[in-house]
Length: 527
Image (cartoon, rainbow, N blue to C red):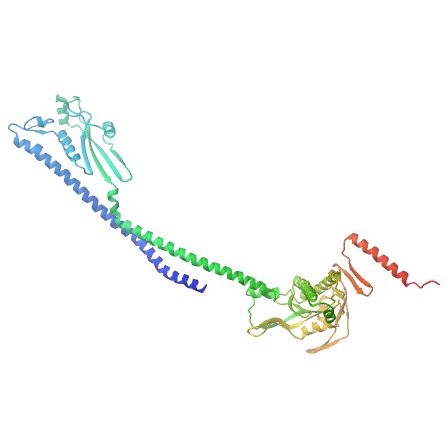
């Protein structure tokens, strides 16, 4: 993963300057390339126009030299201007004829500019003009409105063709000539009439100018190459990132599995605080007022001797699982399992206040004893002759709580005389009973009925400690489901008073029969 990360970092260091350079070149290169191409295109068009104008002027000069000056020099008599000047020695063309002849010469070459002088009313003896649709429409439109320009643009994807038509307007001289000429097809011309049109046609092949945009083409080629390079680099980086993501996913799955396994060795509150970052894994403690709970199984050594190791393991694991579930339900921090003993405390890392912590601990102890009575019934049905009976002690006082140990291995636990007192109170409790210190009893006295026992002395505690043995439950605890259990030779009693109604009635009947049998047996025999 480190190698892939270095590759990505190296690639990013390389791509950064390249990307900046590409952006700068892209911003500057486009206007520069467009300006250079426009300059070249303008030069190309100017050269083309100059060439066409030069050709047209040459045609006009050649026509003027041969058909006007030449004929004037060859004339023996007076020079006249007529439309059929070629048939009259010494004659020169009139303006209309001059325009027609120039159009033929200019359009005879394969140039981009063509010129025509056409009319739909030619003189007699002259070849009729072949008019196309544009020319016919132009004559019609210009006679209706001589000032309206007539322009047509056509062509394909690779060339454009522009045709412009201008009116040939009759002046006074033209009107006089046409109205009196015997070959004129019309003799009622008026000044301002449109005689015909002169048409200029320009053909511009687009394909011929494509190469004029060589700088833009080079720019787009560079942009395409830069884009492809960027895409390839991005794909490569994406592949590297996917590889890292895959490794990270595998690492996360591995860490998640490991964390779940580690969670089995820690209290959920500690596990949560460590993995959420609320607590640092360092050797550090603090002094807090806690409520400590200690429980132990009565005659566990004798139970071990009677059970096989496999059965004992199952039994003990089931016992600790049930007790831990109840502890966590009430918000306790499960400190450790010591053989058959269980140490939990309230007040760290989460607390609801000293009084509520003590009350929660008492509720937990009551629920544990009741659950243990239910488990004993189940275990007896499985063949366990003498199931567990637990003694429980609860004390409230100040302890040091936090991480104890070395830098390599530490344990989150509590240390102090008050913790030892909870263990001592457990040792003097009755099997199945709960013993409280006065500090705890003062906080929960509205929940239990308890009697003081003989004072005890504890090492590390200067005062005498008065234990309180819980004899009954009050308030909310008394309203909880009750289980009555008693087991001895010839006696096996387990009664859950929260059973369904039909089961309660059945229990009443069986208990009545048992009481009757005991009563009869206790009466003296009659002689």
